[in-house]
Length: 93
Image 1 (tube, rainbow, N blue to C red):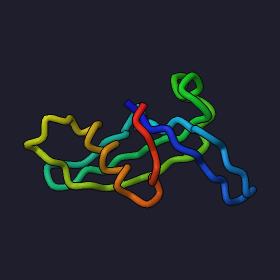
Image 2 (tube, one colour):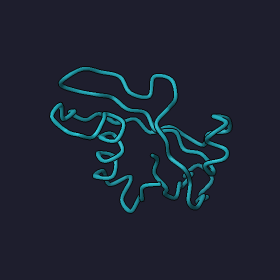
Image 3 (cartoon, rainbow, N blue to C red):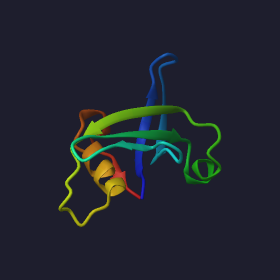
């Protein structure tokens, strides 16, 4: 699971279309029963993301996990991210 969404680099006023946002491989989810922190990495596309090289940026978020949910914490992180204004319009891939 990952998210597909544009990324705008404000330093250069460039928008990269259809970037692949995935939870970081190492230390992508940290925390406990009341709060989890997740880090999403942004890549040009899935093929680049699979190499874990050449990421454009990171996005950190915090959310309260639902311990009773059928969704694992990774799915919960993606679902929570889509509720944030930054990820408005992101789609699951």
